[in-house]
Amino acid sequence: MSERGRRAGLALLPLAFLLLMSILPLLRLLQEGQGAVSADLFTDPYLQWRVLWSLLQAAASSVAALLIGLPVAWCLARYRFPGRSLSLRLLMLPFVMPTLVAAMGVLALFGPQGLLGVNLQDTPWLLLYGNLFFNLPLVIRAACEGLAQLPASRIAAARTLGATPWRVFWRVEWPAVRPWLLSALCLVFLYCFSGFGLALLLGGQRYATVEVEIYQLVSYELKLADAGALALLMLLVTGAIATLYAWLERRLAAPLKVDPVLPRRPQGMEWLQLAAALAMLLLFAGLPLLAVLWRALQALAVSGFSLLHDEEVLLALGNSARFSAMAVLLAALLGWLHALAARGSLWLRALAFLPFVVSPVCVAFGLLLLYPQWSASLPLLLASYALLAYPFVARSLAGALDSLPRHWPQAARSLGASPLRVFARVEWPLLRPAFRRGLAFAAATALGEFAVTLFLSRPEWLTLTTLIYQRLGRPGADNAASAMLLACLLMLLALLAFLIIEWPSAAERPLRKES
Image 1 (cartoon, rainbow, N blue to C red):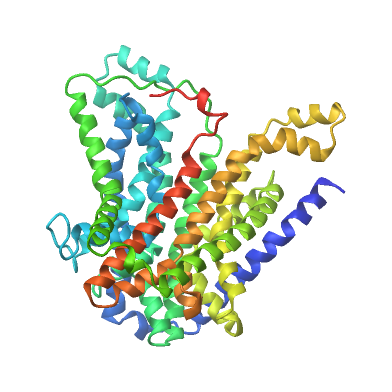
Image 2 (cartoon, rainbow, N blue to C red; image 1 turned 30 degrees about the vertical axis):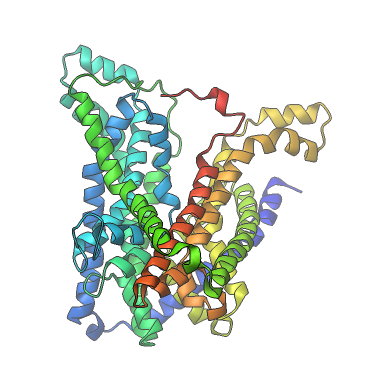
């Protein structure tokens, strides 16, 4: 079989899956929206405010992430200090946290009876802070990667010519890091604009976004036509931003191999700069998680584990574990096939990004419209989980396959090794770390999935995320304490996925140098 034929065979299953679970539901959603667009819908002041606020909060979060993240990233990239490696690793932690855990942490800090004594409920600042929790580390990581692509010789040349540190940054470092920041800011805007869980819990009635409005129109008012029109608007905006992101990513796809600037030990006032950077990182990326842990410990001190010993909690825990395990198995299969088929094919690799740019609310709504007879079926729910999870496996493996030395498998074959032995002894040890990372991200996504579950789940399919949301909506201190304990349990499960992602293997550990 030719290489093209083999690639077509491998791509058959993931492409069919994307067609049935993403493309066709989106086309059905577009059809629903086109039939509903009218002047009356978008001249409604209420909906105008929803759309305007969705755009404003995404733009404001992007600007704030840039203004805060760039100085923090510069300090992390340029200064050497005890715990630097750990700090860089912990930047990944907010990425694997479920949105409900982040929202609970923000409420524990700035909600009624918050730990910091400042009540920001029913204000826009609550949602903006929650957005920064998830997206500030994204900007910091992108800026650090951009600074690492800058040759040390260019910095040294600017300094020998008498340039001040500020001029070196503005004329040398900023042009190098700008494409990386623009790429990250596209994702920040996309995530904030199409986010659901944070906006639902932190936005309140006045500051909820279009995503929340779509959910309310479908679930409570049954206005599918209006919801379809709003979802069409969401798709147009997210599609434009995703196109810009894909263009920027293509420019950054093959970074040059350079001799980067080595971090140095801070001197004098530079220690204050570093302390301020670490304080900002703790404030926006660490405090919500610490608040969840503290509130959970307080609840345990008062009531013990009795709040968790009921049938609902056991059912939710069992369902979350069962659904996540089945979704991850399906995601592993789809991710492997997609990554293998996408070798050397730009459009197949780009298709793996599709579930990232479409909001879960739009996906779930499109599935409801396209498959109404299966709206309460477990296979559709699990397939939706896998749709949102498998791109992590595909993209991680695709990068590992690109970096796989081509001459190693060829040398093994020339020595008489069978294809199976070549894979087991040569390729698999090199691909295993990327596969592990992809599976960990997929597991964290399935565990924390919230929007799709609200649309497609049934009462007997209660999960940890939906149970936390239900407990938050019930009055009483016991329900609030139970919700916090469940959020802490969900956080610990996500933390386990984080450790799988970031913990070095036995083979990697001796090769690493502490910063």
